[in-house]
Length: 166
Image (cartoon, rainbow, N blue to C red; front, side):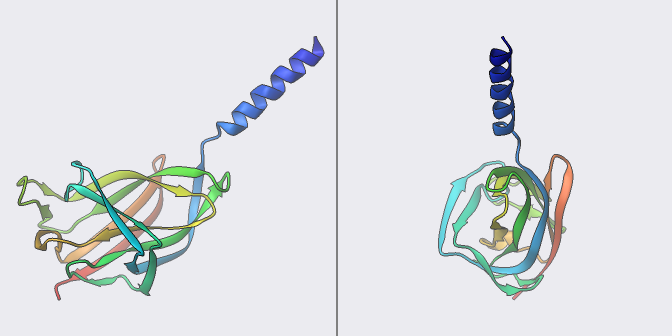
């Protein structure tokens, strides 16, 4: 009987460890700046002010700065290493972009947004980045843009970018 109980407790312990939610404790080696990417794809998301989320592969900061010239195609954001546990697991985080007055007013919907919020993932112990890609004129609002990243209502990162007209 003790053997059966020991096996059952071992299985429960293994299942609990496997089901452990990945937790981001902090971001290290944070580099804000201009980002270049090897491969760029877009994903439709009607909840975002532009109607799409831009995803990249091989992205990295090529110029460390928080000052951005708001030109078409400029990609800016932060590069980081996520620290947490368990290492190698994907963790879900909330991304929040805050925009300056007068906000981003979509000519397609007529809606003005002062924030965009969505979820993304990071892999614990690896390098990653979050960024914004400027496009149409209405998205290139000068002023202070703020990127915030949080998990379970714990703010892990806040970075301001100062956008100026070319």
